[in-house]
Amino acid sequence: MLVSGKEILDHAHKLGYAVGAFNTNNLETTQAIIQAAEEEKSPVIIQSSQTAITYAGIDELYQMVKGIAGRASVPVCLHLDHGTDWAAVMQCLRTGWTSVMFDGSKYDLAKNIEITKSVVEIARPMGVSVEAELGKIGGVEDHINVSEKDATMTDPDEAVEFVEKTGVDYLAIAIGTAHGMYKGDPNLDFDRLETIKKLLNMPIVLHGASGISEEDIKKAVSLGVNKINIDTELRLAFQQAVHKVVRETPDVYDPRKILGPATLAIKEVVKGKIKMFGSSGRA
Ligand code: G3H
Ligand code: 13P
Ligand code: ZN
Ligand code: NA
Image 1 (tube, rainbow, N blue to C red):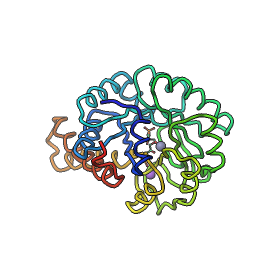
Image 2 (cartoon, protein in one colour; image 1 turned 30 degrees about the vertical axis):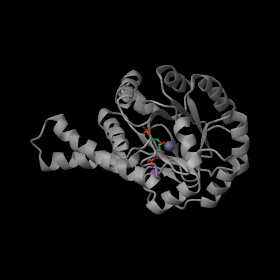
Image 3 (cartoon, rainbow, N blue to C red; image 1 turned 180 degrees about the vertical axis):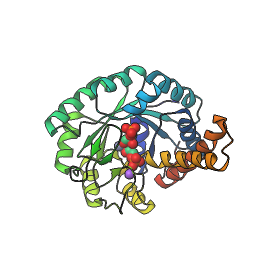
């Protein structure tokens, strides 16, 4: 069934584990994510960026996730990832998303607070949870591009003020992760995470988690991260599986035979992450 993000993440916060938030834009990835969660008996968050929604179509994406989640034996949350446009956030609320992120990290603190607060005022009575971002997470996506020098860590005192004034349900913080794979070893600021978690005592979100070691992920979870975003590693699993079929059996032209192995590959990655995050058996 489709449930709100708050329902899933408040439980994770209370019991000290994290739930994976996996990005989708097509049928194969969606099936892989939900099947993996069912096999692990884990709650799961399925998320799509604004460009993923444009690619698949908002109604198509919603009906697909709702249909598959509706028959699933585990709770599924449908979340808007990095909603930077007011219109995109409102369209997701209207269509039936159960969680939205308003990403105002490009604005100054006052403007980020002002818009995030308005989103919360509209979403809360609809039963839809809200994530916001404070600080700037580095890396490149379709429509956001934050260079290493522009990435800024989340300030703990600002985080307290931000949450008090906006009333968001969970907060994405910048502690040194970046979107995409890493060139070197990422250096995460665990002290900052620990401080922010103690001050806020609420669900914390980690973006850019593809490429972070199991050891660092487990440490982040033990220090209070409750939602972990994974996109790039799913894309790589998809690409490698498709490439293998095309390379080894160039005569195959049935899309099911080309894409079926990609579904299985993504499912294995998602199951591994679910185990690592500690949400197996929590559904
Ligand atoms: O953090 C963003 C996700 O990886 C989605 O990226 O805008 O290319 O769909 P995208
Ligand atoms: P990765 O691409 O590093 O997995 O980050 C995903 C993400 O943060 C989506 O919001
Ligand atoms: Zn992100
Ligand atoms: Na990453």
